[in-house]
Image (cartoon, rainbow, N blue to C red):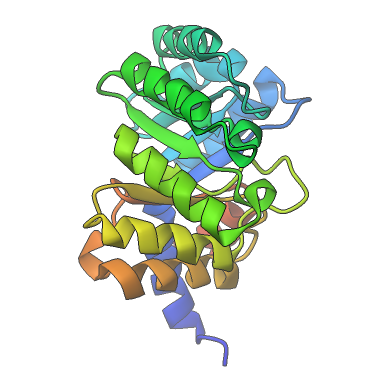
Length: 249
């Protein structure tokens, strides 16, 4: 049964502050990112962050000045390479440009081959380079595939002290799925909720977003659902949510 419109508006109002409004297209331009930031600024309820490529951080900083909307950017993306020095340099660069949050890709292919120490070295380097800034670790769950691998990768991230576990880059065949999210959230719950969760990749509707919200609530409780711990990365979803909360004319 579909929620009625009043409930949908309430859910949209709940989800918008948890959203990372995202544009990670290879053909992104300054004008497109400027427009993205205008959407964030003008929404009745602003998102938690915009997530963009490093080249567009300056544009976003200017467009979002004074709003409180965070700027997130990506490193080791989307390949999830094993060069810890590269990851450190990329993080230092995006921080210098003005990023508040860093979404870094786990070396998932190496991890899947059993090269756990190599993957951990990269994650440790990312954690150190980020300092006090928020670090989200992208597990690329659709590529990891096996539930055991997803579980172990999630635990690796928590042990390394990342702030969020994120499902996907959105650049592979299988991105966010409720099944992978449930595994990640189970690991987070087993670790007393000391790491956040971000679902990203292919979440295009309110109904899809609610599924992830319900998974988190069931395991970690209503009080855990806050921007400091729960995010959804999306672009198309934002328009539906913004329309639901727009003031009546």
